[in-house]
Image (cartoon, rainbow, N blue to C red; front, side):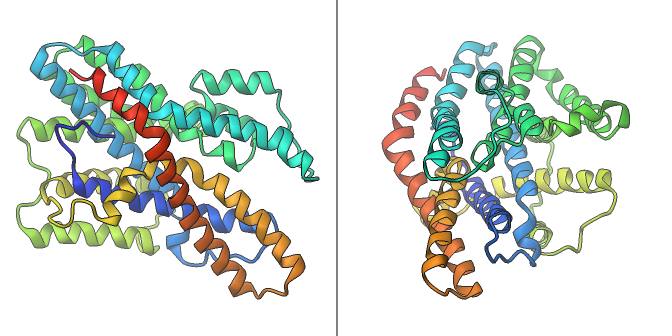
Length: 359
């Protein structure tokens, strides 16, 4: 959620699209897992991980940029207020999904006669998830799709627990150099065999630091965007092609990460200057507004839709195409509806409260 002082409309649209990419990435995966027909032959259905990395880059661009602005204007950063804002934005939904996930796997599925193996101690699971380590929990125990989705929230919070105090301590003139060095060194460590624990626990901190780096250097007057509109259009086209084709898929993972970092950061800087001129209340913008709910709730909706579809399949002789269409459309629109209800009647209270902790 951006500050009321500045809202980048194009970034809202980007967030909404990336949330939908995550949804359509998981639909065929879970359909396959329960034995239902599925379709994932097109590259667009296999870009969920990349979409999350775009979220990480956006997060760094927006949040580190706001911290830089705060310190530049006031001479300090209120770490207390920063953490309170993070808690109010993320954790009501985070804990709602966490509690539902534990309830679902420990109590609801057994009541429904579904044999789902829980291979972790509940107390240990609670401790790991409360201690900002859901990614470690997911990697160790594979606890189920509803809880799986929490990993990225943990990775973000681990990064900001580290970076916010550092930014409060050092001078703003050192921000750009520090973030650049961190990004490059961490990227190398992430792909170094001797520090494989970073990759095995999905600690993609360098996307957030890279987003923060470009936010700072653009504020310092350096230009990463193109003034010539056809050049900006070529960036947007390249980004679209990256998500809907395999043309830029490298066998070398390190090369792929470099391309993603460059593409995502340059895309964001161009979107910011190429401000959307359409309806401020457009559907795509609203999807961006509720994108956190779309991301967090879609596994709950998908599990419900798959359970219903399995029952319908036992009753009716449904074709594979009918099942695929039903699952995809019901999951997408059901997730949007649930995210809308959550944003309006649940999250909005905490978002209003969050504004009180801004300088």
